[in-house]
Amino acid sequence: MSYRGGALTSRILIISTNNESAPQPTVPIGAAWVAESLRLAGFEVQFLDLCFQRDPLKTLGEKLKSFSPSGIGLSVRNLDNCDFLSPRSFLPEVKVLVEFIKARSNARILLGGAGVSIMPLQVLEYLDLDYAVVGEGERAAVAFFENTGKGRAGHVPGVVCRTGCNEYGGGHAPQFSDNFVVPRMHAWVDTRRYLRLEPVLPVQGKRGCANRCLYCTYRGIEGGSWRLRDAAAVVEEIGSSMRHTGAREFEFVDSVFNEPEGYLETLLEEILRSGLKARFSVSSLSPKGLTRDQVKLMERAGMTSLVVTPESVSDVTLAALRKEFTERDVYHAAELLSGSSIRALWCFLVGGPREDAATLAGTINFMNRGMARKDSAFITTGVRIYPGTGLRDLAIGEGMLAAEDDLLMPAFYFSRDLTPRQAVEALQKGVSPASRCIFLSETRANSLGPLRRLGTMLGLPTPFWRYAGFARGVTGKGRQRILC
Image (cartoon, rainbow, N blue to C red; front, side, top):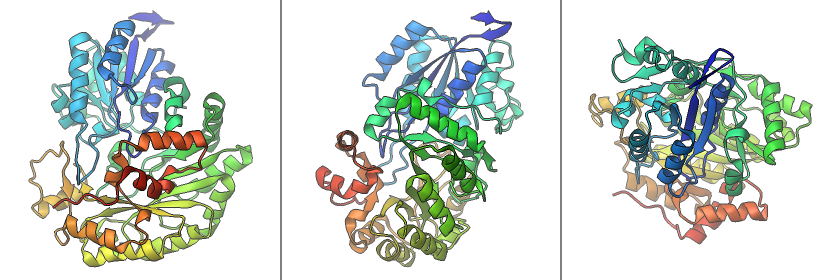
């Protein structure tokens, strides 16, 4: 440990533990954000991304030996694969990493990431660790490592501790700030590895979500209000990424791209004003309030595809999910997008509260009559239940869960008025053509990685989900596996 200009500095290793590649590998933008914040605070920082490591423990051991960190930030993006038909927890793999680190290093470990923020105390107990960040990690990680060894590490705002705290989180709520640091993702992540599989990099223009969907955890992870970055700073970040990585396509990973009012317009108009020549996609767009002018603006700014997240096309199920729009809004959004050059991937959660054969028929009817021919649908059967959500309370009330269930391992809600077999068979028989319907389990085929690389080498237009029908033929995934 050394001192530079009077400020405490030490060696911090940030480790992105995620190695899941389905439906595509995800660039660890959040971990990069924390690494950059630590660097700006005067720490000596190195970054280890385990996504593409064939032998993660060997790579980790070499890094621990060569860098000898005094502090380690472990980022856990997801707790599990959220697949009702084939559930798998990622925590056992993380536990192996933690035990490996403890056997070789005395570094203070801080756990973080979106998955951890959902249920920090349960994850800490499972991994036998002491400290975790709830919410954003940029300020909390800096404060934690500055206070390491001073007896105050467990009383840093935004940091929770497993033992020795007066109450949950040491009395500290999640920390959410409007002072955004530019993540400089290219400085921490080998973006070439990701771009070879799909030539798109993530960018985040805002954080938080003011919606109150029954099942969603965003409010706990990013806060319950919209916090917008300066549009010019976002555009500068994109331009910098283009110069340093050669990327020409970017995906906005905001929770809902067309909320709050005016955000979409401000950001895209800044892109047009800057003269930035890039292509864009969106990972979450709500059907609520979408206008023709917004669609035209997206086209002019270079938007090529959207992931639209209605989850259902039945007023009964939408109301039960606490969505603030109706099936009429969904059809209106589809009509606007059908007349544009933008492709849409419509996401649906099948088996949610009050789902039955009639409500599912409404969703199937939309796939057949509402979606444009250029669009596809992504189907998830069953809804993952998380602490702190209305879905947990509903599941307890319906006898699906006991109040003491910690939900650390995957647990799912499925409507009592429909069986999984009935749902999948209705989708297989009802959606025409079937190739437009992508099931979650189909994204885990081993051959999809080589197909993505081939698509990148050939320069095929993105998004690659547009080739789902072709991929299904190659992988032999002709039917969705049905849970009896």
